[in-house]
Length: 85
Image (cartoon, helix red, strand yellow):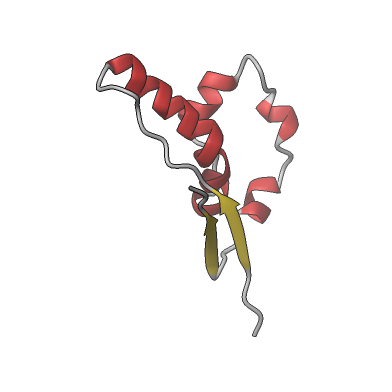
């Protein structure tokens, strides 16, 4: 039996300060740096907050074709993470 895997370059994202603005900035960076990949693979969907925040930049209905998310969310056996320091 074959095993399937994918390796992602995920990023540790932390706010610079405890301010609400920095926390929001960290969430936005996490959306486009990490969750844009992990959402479809692990949950079968792009995060709603990502879709909402980027709707003026990306035509998600045009970009994501019927069947894409089902194919992307095919179960995997291993999730590899490249973590660079």
